Length: 68
Image (cartoon, rainbow, N blue to C red):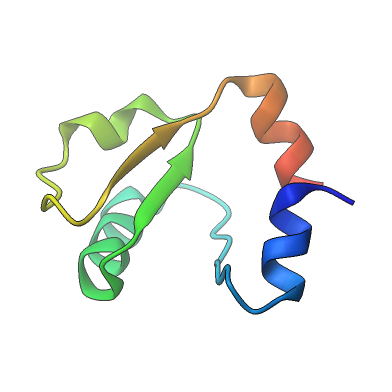
């Protein structure tokens, strides 16, 4: 079991997955929920996210493992 799966199962991690091109929606959601974005999309570097938010930039291989 992956670390993310364990955190989710224990109610520590909450996430949503949005497929397609919805960068502005995701950035707005991160601002509203005061959370980080995990993505392999460097477009998120262009958004002015508050200090309590941020971006965890994943490489394509890791991103594909998380999305499964």
